[in-house]
Length: 357
Image (cartoon, rainbow, N blue to C red):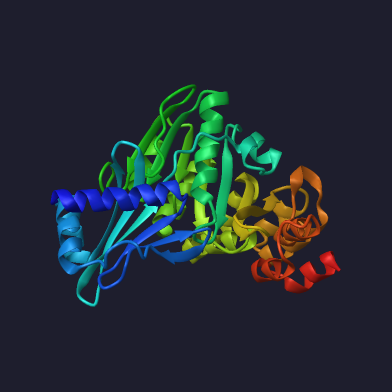
């Protein structure tokens, strides 16, 4: 990379970090664009991005192994730490025959669950010996921050655990404290999610943290881990806690669905679905839906009646259980978010209207 290119990239990434933006996008023919608080902003003081500039960036940033992936799949994602302090997930892809780059800023997470205004019961469950915790939400909802805070909680407060993460790519970095934490990148440190789960099942691992479920074989191996008495923290993309369970089951072979439901009914601890909503006056605030596998929930799950879990969310007040709409209604009533913004985020708009009436 030319010295001027390095200066330009460092300046852009410094802007990304200082403005606490989430993403930086570089596409030919346009100025750099950042996403801040969910909105896109052009950096008009910067020069228009050129083909040659992006090609030089790709040549400099993409290693030999990733270049093979890029050549074959026309896209590659990896993580990189710039100037020893700014860590990003970098996505290189092609559009209209030319390279584009996106940088997802990965801020240092030192917080624990108790620092994030999340249910206190989540902090309790992460310290259990076994079970399944699902952290779900749409893109840019803060899921990876919550997972990192969960690992920090165990690592700083204990009990001591042997934690194994399976990620593609590795994002947040952790140093061992009360726990041993091994972070394995799929495709680099382990061949696949299935292979990583099998090694965890056969090895001396207490907690497995996955950033996604890749296929039916991985879903089956995860269920086997749960049956073997391990703790699993799984990240998924879904718009509700109930949808995340249905999505997980969709990965499972139909012949295994009855068994999968029984395992979920007995081993699921909780599902946290979260979103970031625009606040009045600027910034964003975390809202969440929290489903705990208690009361009638296990019987509904075992029967595959995920739709009946709505009654658990709305009527069960134990353990901080709540539907998304109650979280949104509380923020509206406190004057933190606008009614129209709450309605945009609600899964059940009529229910939300009834709550804030």
